[in-house]
Image (cartoon, rainbow, N blue to C red; front, side, top):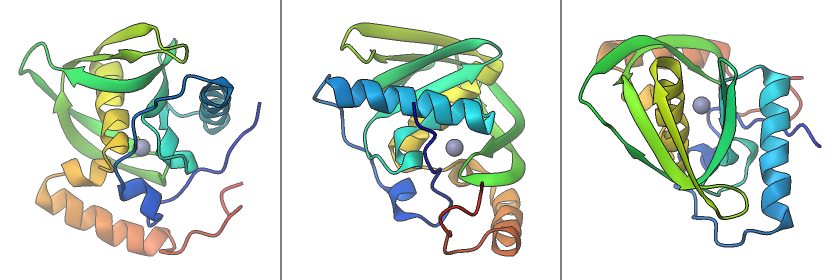
Amino acid sequence: MTVRQVRLFGDPVLTMAADPVTDFDKSLRTLVRDLSETLRDQRGSGLAAPQIGVPLRVFVFDVEGVRGHLVNPTLDFPSTEEQTGPEGCLSIPGLYYDTRRRLHAVGRGVDQHGRPAQVVGTDELARCLQHETDHLDGVLFLDRLDPTTRRTAMRDIRVKLSPHPIRGLLR
Ligand SMILES: [Zn+2]
């Protein structure tokens, strides 16, 4: 297993839509392993492949002991109920902002072997599923903030994060 470098805000891979996985081969299983290992190392709750520079539709999650991965996921929302709470991102380390999300979400896709997979989430797991699926579309949680909070966030980022990430800076 390998802990991979997490790409930081400003890296173009984070704002590109990722490609669907078509090959369910050994390299996909290595990707899922590396994502899981990197997530554990970073003590995060979710990590999407673009965040380690791989533009494929794969993410892993670990929320309150519920761990797994989804390949080529789509999201369904069983209700219109919403939640607002602090959200952060391993690609924008150390910054958290109240973000409005759906309260319930169902992620459907396949696993690393191409078998159908489904994750049903409420609260933090629902938030994570929405955050990680956004990453696969090149969308960051900053894009989900209300305009005032987003302005504050962009100011904080200019102060705290270099616009040109330096490899190895985080570790
Ligand atoms: Zn993120």
